[in-house]
Length: 189
Ligand SMILES: NC(=O)c1ccc[n+]([C@@H]2O[C@H](COP(=O)([O-])OP(=O)(O)OC[C@H]3O[C@@H](n4cnc5c(N)ncnc54)[C@H](OP(=O)(O)O)[C@@H]3O)[C@@H](O)[C@H]2O)c1
Image (cartoon, rainbow, N blue to C red; front, side, top):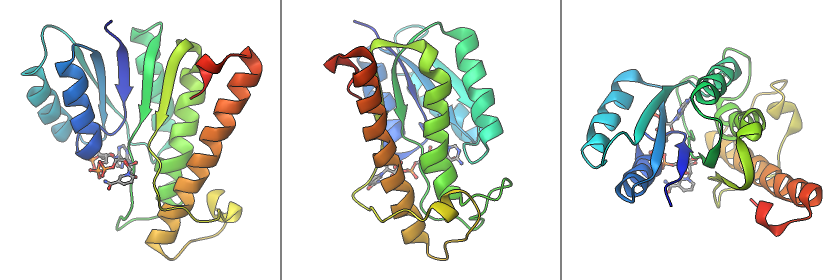
């Protein structure tokens, strides 16, 4: 059965490879990237694998929560439902680690953007939909002051590892809260 699948960060790495596989299987894949040229290149490459109109592209810089909002609205304008949301986009190291909102970019892109995107797209997700969050084996206790943008983390690895544990904690919490709400295992994310 064809599924509609949004993959964040599908211009490179795991996201791009996942998009290739799913498009080859005939799914309707919604690509996402922050760099228009890279996104256009990915769409061109992937279109060669598609049979028909199976690909759409969306631009958003996930270090900006305003952009997350724009992405959500753009997806919701075209789709009443989503079968799978893959929160894949992630960042480890960057020359500008503080976002315009004063957040560490790892917390913004790796933790807060997936949280916000999922919450805002929840009306499109049904009982059989799935959310896949790309975490990491790198995990470190979360400094809540840094998560809130009130303290800076000087170490790239620590910031990445903290952002990924925060993502893992929230993923578990989301799965449990949806299970409680529906009483169904089918909502275990
Ligand atoms: N590779 C590994 O060994 C590994 C291990 C554990 C977990 N992971 C996790 O798996 C996911 C994918 O990893 P990967 O190795 O495939 O990474 P990657 O090759 O660096 O690709 C990351 C993707 O995220 C996008 N991205 C980064 N910052 C963004 C932003 N501010 N706004 C929007 N998109 C943004 C990138 O866009 P651009 O192309 O424009 O940069 C790219 O499409 C990440 O969440 C990573 O933490 C990876």
